Image 1 (tube, rainbow, N blue to C red):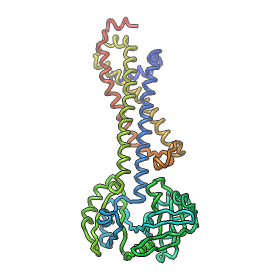
Image 2 (tube, one colour):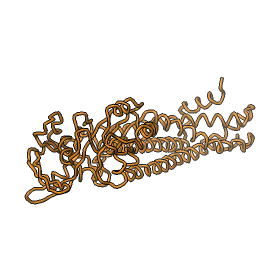
Image 3 (tube, rainbow, N blue to C red):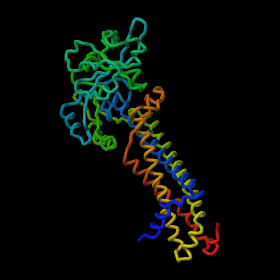
Length: 416
């Protein structure tokens, strides 16, 4: 039988152990562990949810990997590329690639009787993954992408554009495009309004049929601004990007245009640099909360040892070694920590679930790109936080437990 565990269990479960001094000490230690773990669970859930939400929004506009013209990447001017069916099939067959889609862009001006706005018209085809855009719809519907004649000039605009130009569903608006030697005008009908709260996208990008900007650019039917690749596992993006680089970079299409590729990290470095700063905040909070739990446990253990001085003396008089007594109090601490972890899990997971269901915490979309604090509950991370808190708390208690070796049996049994 494990004697230290047996003694610790008996002491912990008997009613008489919670005396006037130890009762508040045990409660404070338990509460310190619970609050520390709950804060860690909420912090990690918020950061994971925030990073993944922003990442998905950026990918919704720019995909995970973009293949475009080398000259466009160098100059910023629109140059077309042509992706052959053979190359497209090879890209689709790459590991981790779940979808391939083409797009065409044209810059223009939306004008009403009282205002105008410079925007980017992004032409998308029927093969475009509209899952993200559909989830951001505020009103209306997506443009009809199956009509190859483009007889209906339908336009999906952002809520920002709608507010600035006073547009609504069904409103007709003029768009002007400046060509090499002429100014062309098209009249669109607003069919849908979306909102992502990503200012750099909502202020500029509207969506229409693929063939409309293609004709405005005077490009061939098989040309486009680029190809977007969506991956299944974002953690494997660097490996997938390497395969794409080997396949397309420095290759030329049938028109002699040089191809190149870039990942979402390279296309929007400022966004991901900002998100990476959140990791530093997480580590700081985790360290502080572990320190809170550790220090409360140290103080609680010292109080319990001092209160159990007579018991320690009796055990030593009966032949118990210092190591055995130390392990007894460490097991006693494990019971306290375990109860604190259980309370912390209930509190932390409860707060995360409440935020997921009801969105109690609101944020400023202009600053944080979301209206409510996004949270993502990862059970594996929660278990890891529990285990790390338990091990670190026990580790920091090893040194204070050596206090029992300074207690003399004869003097301790007269201790009050």
